[in-house]
Structure formats: structure tokens, C-alpha cells
Image (tube, rainbow, N blue to C red; front, side, top):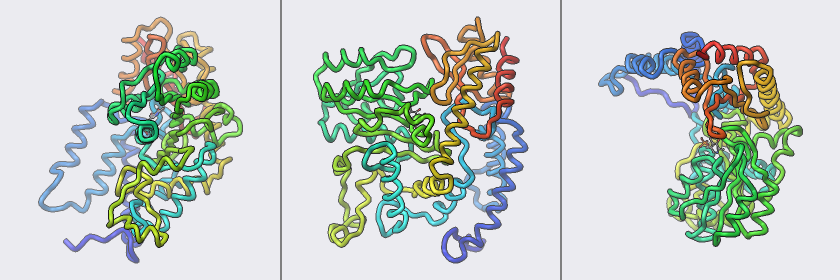
Length: 451
Ligand SMILES: Cc1ncc(COP(=O)(O)O)c(C=O)c1O
């Protein structure tokens, strides 16, 4: 076999072109073979098909058809967030333009651990992260792999600023990555505050802050995973100020509302946080990964400082070469900022706002359909784009079975959430191409699967 061509360099684009045609054909064929939002038949069927396509994962002799075969198998066996009936998770359909930009990131392969591996990407990241931070009212932002890493970093900065006895106080509605980060970082056991009806209770937070000695890190959520609800941010920020507590806001989901004139007010109070998690692979239509942690006090980032001569020698830094190691706990790092920058420039704020407004409008329409439906109960009107519902008079086992039946048949992908002690079906609408007819079909499928 001749030496395989490279993706970058003068011959890179010409080498990529026919391979891209192969990938695009395999995506088309694989999507067609699936024929719905999810492969039918459940985990065993999908695993058997992958095993069949893969055969020996490390054969002695290579197979030039592997690109087509494996991309086809992956597409056929994917949950497709671009299908309007795929609406379970905060799993967005990526924009074509962002995905095209991501190809350039893979081809050029800059690594953001030193300037000499990523000269332009370094400058791009610095400018775009600052611009995004400013939309939150904060000063700077780090690029992360998503909400989980952002939340971990927020706890790390809190620990480094206020000491190892800093206690996390979070609502029972908080994302699991927050208590997990406390465990990972060796912080005291978190205090979990009640969140009746899915929203952190400020009175209970006040009691906790009064009763427990500090230092405290309070976390609030702007867009809960289960119901897309927003904690009362201004009230929580006021309590933090009064009690001298640090505030982190997890806006992994709700952060996308910042783009929208119509919905931005729901995030009032965000600017009072010390740190804010954003995640543009949710309400930002980016391919994974596209997380950010915005910080109010960039000086705190010195806690991340690392010195290693091969990446950030003092004399290089003194000569004006950017020191990138303090911008992430990772070393080698993809330029995820490229697809984000391309998206922001291509669509503009109003273009992104249109997408946000669309999915929020679809959620309101779905909620109205459910509200008027005699066989379904609506949990509440959506705040962002999540709608919880269940068949009237169904028990939790029935709700779980409806969801799993739809998954097994590959006909719809709905999520599940436990709220107020009951299990609900969850539709998380992130597809701006979803039409009102699709919503009616989603309900019809759920109804048709109800025993
Ligand atoms: C509120 C919230 N925070 C954090 C996360 C974690 O984000 P990621 O999956 O990108 O790590 C999620 C994921 O759904 C989330 O809903």
C-alpha cells in the first residue's frame, strides 16, 4: 500500500475531495437505510450490524472501502437529531456551516496548547471567547468540551480562590456534573437544596446559607436538564451577595437565550455570577464539542497556570508568545472555536436568535397541543424548549414502556424526566426545521403506543 495522503499541506484538499464525496454518499445511503429518527430493533440489532460491518477491528491488511462501510453503518445506526421525531435530549442537529468549519479544524489540526502549534487559532480563540463572555456580562471565557468540564472548572476556580473547605450548595434540580465535580475535586459533601416544581427554592437557600459556615459556592441553573426551567437568578444572586457566597450559574442549556431579544430577559441576573457555563452544542447548533466557561475575574485563571519549558518557556512568554496552558486543564486541544466563530459570523446574532425563537415557539405549540388533548396531561408551559407530558391515568411503568417501545421500533426518540414524584415523557425541541405537523405526529405516535 502506498503511503496514505495527508489532510493538510498543499495536496491535502485534493486528497480530501474524493474522500468527502465518499463520506457524503455514505451519509446519504445510511440515512436512507435507517429511514427514521433511530435504528429499529434495539441495542442487540444495532450491535450485531456494527459487528458485522467491522469484522476484525485491526486486520493485518487494510480495506480501502472501510470509510464508506463504517460511515454508512454509523449513519444507519445513529439517532438523528435532524429528524423532528428525535427530541429526547439536549442533543442538537449541528448546522451544516459549523460542521464544514469543523472539517477545516480537523484538516489543519491546530493544537491550542502552544502558539507554535496554532498561531491563528490562538488569536481567533482569544477574540471570540472574549466576545462571547461579554454577551453574558462577564470578562473572559475558556473553551471546554461541554457543560460537564465547564462545571468542573467552575468548582476548581472556586476551590482555588476560597480554599479546599468550600462547600457546594446546589438545588436538587442541578446537573449531576456539579456534585460529581465536588467529589472529583475533594470538596466537602455538597448541600442539596429543595427545588419544588423543578426550581431552586430561594427561602431554603437562605436558610442553608444562614445555618452553614462558609465558604460557599452556590450554583443556580438557567435551563434545567429535566424541564428547561430557570432558577430565580436575581433573587439567588442577591442572597449570595448578602451572605458573601460565590455564585456559579450553569447556563449550559439556557445560555442560548442570550442571542434572542425576545427571550434574553429570562437570564437577568446572569451577569452577577462569578462563573457561567455555556454550551453551544445545545442551544447553539454546534457539532460536539463546544463548551465555554465564562469568568468574571480573569485573574482567578492564574490558578490554572502551568509551566513546562517545551510549551511555554518564560523567555518565549516574555517575547510576546501567548501562554496557552493556563486556558485549560487539557494539553492538546482542538480549535473548537473555529466552528463557533464561523457560525457567529455567518448567522450573526439575529440569525442565531431566529433559531432560538423558532425552537421556543415550537415548544409552546407542542404544549398547546398537549394541553388541548384529552388523553395527555401537560406538566407546565415551557420556559425554553422542553415539554413534559404523560398520558392521563398512566402509571410510571406505562410511561417508561411507551418511551422504550418507540425507541425499539425506531419511530421516535423521547426523553424521560421525574418531576414531582412522577415519570414524564420529555420532548426537548432543538431542531429549528421542525414544523407544527411534526409535533402532531410525535403526539400521535405517543398516543398510538399508549396501551
Ligand atoms: C444543565 C446542564 N448542565 C451541564 C450539562 C452537561 O453538559 P455536557 O453534556 O456538554 O457535558 C448538561 C447536559 O445536558 C445540562 O443539561
